[in-house]
Length: 47
Image 1 (cartoon, one colour):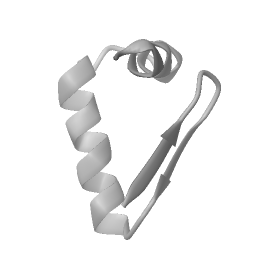
Image 2: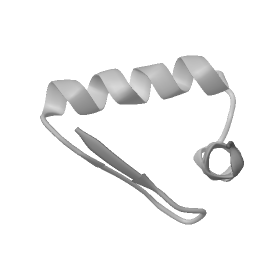
Image 3: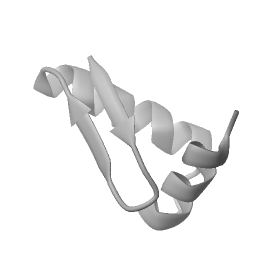
Image 4: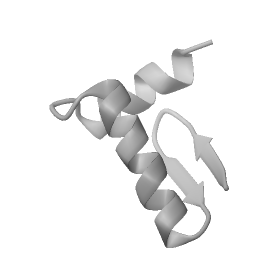
């Protein structure tokens, strides 16, 4: 599975079950109240 993150978009390529798992992991990492815009900015700047 591949994921491409930029400040204005998020692209996840893979099977549906892989995408669901990846999104759930990111939600646990960021928290349920974080907006996608804020998450992408944080994730892209993370080393």
